[in-house]
Length: 66
Ligand SMILES: [Zn+2]
Image (tube, rainbow, N blue to C red; front, side, top):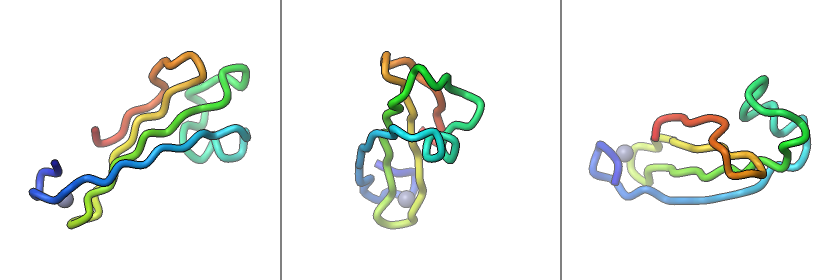
C-alpha cells in the first residue's frame, strides 16, 4: 500500500535493447547482463511510482522509491 493509503498497481516488463535500458538505468548495468527486468508499482490514487530494475542474473541494478 502507498503512503497515501492508495492501492499500488504492479506491472513488470523486460528490456532487451540498449536504448530502452539506458532510459531506466544508464551506466548502472553491463550490456552482457541484458535483458533487464523492471518490476514497477504505481499508486492508483496519487500516481507515486516506484520500481526495481534487475539484470538477467537477478541482481539489483537500480531501486527507486521502493
Ligand atoms: Zn499514493
